[in-house]
Image (cartoon, rainbow, N blue to C red):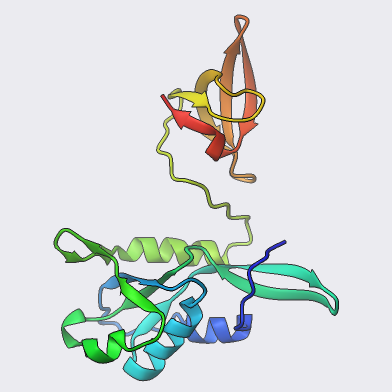
Length: 193
């Protein structure tokens, strides 16, 4: 069950943000950092006022209420809106007058471009019926040495084997008493050595 309240319906969300129709001449993608729970509002205002193509890939969730089951969409990446625009043609005064915008995500050379394949990956996850689990990004390869940082196995060392695609848990082999025990652990309870 989710606890965040989404003020836009899934229909509005899909109509405004997940539109797949784009020009054949595509502009580069950028990430826009916005205030908490302002993603839909910012995307809607940017499209209405400036005609900027926006996307907020998200997952459809449900929660029980007194009147039954309520469905809503929660963004995969809270506080981020992806925009496709030619930055040289944007009216910056009007752009930053949109309530909820904090800034464009930048790297050392200026606004950071987001590769098209990453946008496509987020859209594919949004349309997938498979569960999507968000956890801290830890780059691990099979047989990398890891340490358990919490829970009953805290302090134990082992080897990363894989990550379970259904649960998002890490599969770890822990050496104890000259035997290898295999267990599944939350990614937050494992760190590389």
